[in-house]
Length: 222
Length: 355
Image (cartoon, rainbow over all chains, first blue to last red; front, side):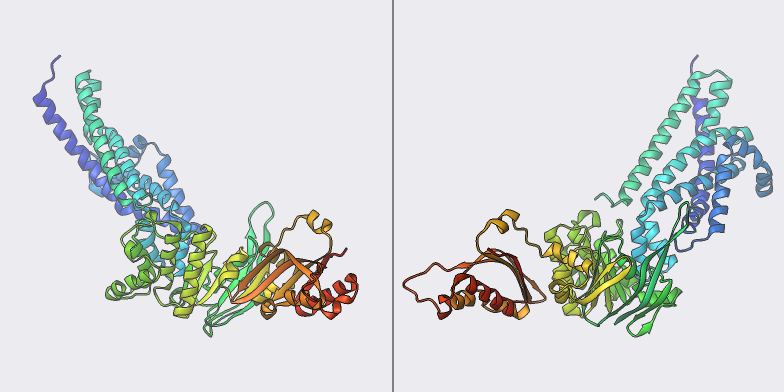
């Protein structure tokens, strides 16, 4: 069977557009909400300046619950939320709601992990010089953990691209959905191969870009 | 300058049985303006915890902390941060920000204290020059050696003109030579900028090099306190004696002491006495030979402290030189007199053996 390149390329371009839309919305929200959430988890932990048992435990609990639900289930579970937020449950924008929720908690965990890697001695030194908690967060913790944030963001982006394949369930479309509908359901192996190759290339580019950024932000090893 | 009154810090050990450990137990210290005060002790003695109470990084469970005539014990929030702007601190592991340049690290305390960018641009090069890193302003800490990192730490700590500099084991992560250079720099900062320094170390050698007064800590308590010279020269507490013995010790082979003929003495000279010519006077007055088997002279704050192991024996008769009048006595008596003479003129004499 010959590939109909013209129709495939149109489909592929549309699919990439949908993927970028979903992943784009989710990753913006991951940074906007997941990053502060990660900071909250970290600075409320024991031994840190805003130690707060209640905030720490409830934050942790929330993140763990969302993270333990498989994404396909989350997609369905959050349909009422999507309906409430957008007035619809179908389409790429609708799919980006559960995708964003998953991305926020996922990224928050990675942010918290990077913050734990910051040498506590540096925080102690900052306190010794009379730096306020907000200053420590903005001018000490943030720049020191930035390489970790960038690496974590790369991991989040790539996971989102993977998750977005399931968005087809709610009519979200995207590259992964194209591979399933044409490649799998219609036995068009060639389409499957082309889309998968396209995804491999996409993931490679994201990973390389993320690595490059992280390397340039990280001065720890000279 | 700094007054600690009955400071106690308790640590709660988490485990099967919750245990309360007194890290610092009822410690009172008074540190004068402009001095270099050392706190020495083995690890776990509580010296680091005590140092941290001075800027309240560690809040004491009991006792008061006075800095510059002000009781700061109950300060919190921004009042405490204001106070900390006046207290610099350097650390064993430097604690520099890895992703900031030397310039930005040194500028940290100034930025925290709300100095203008113009002041920072003027002050930071000045302070980097003082610590000898003017050419490294744009380097990152990972590109520096350990000694250079500590210099950045010192620049950061003194940039904002603090009245006090707290040093938490500042040379313990450095090699011997680098450590000497860092201590030299601290001394210079103390003398030139008049900053009061409180330094903790487990090494008596560090204390010996720069401290004017010393407190010795063991098990959370100060067991002895005094001028550095007195602590080294006449340690009173057993623990201090052990510590000092490690620095000023002379290892003489056992067999040498016991088999050598003659009387073997261990002689301590302190301060002015170290500068008198006691031994040559002994030879001349009593006609006994004085052979030095081992010796060491240390200078602590410009005062000498000597330890010699000497052997006294009969002086071989030299026909060309008449012996002093006393040498007509039998040799045994002359040696007894000589020992008494040395005893009168040295600080402490111990007879290791007499034949």
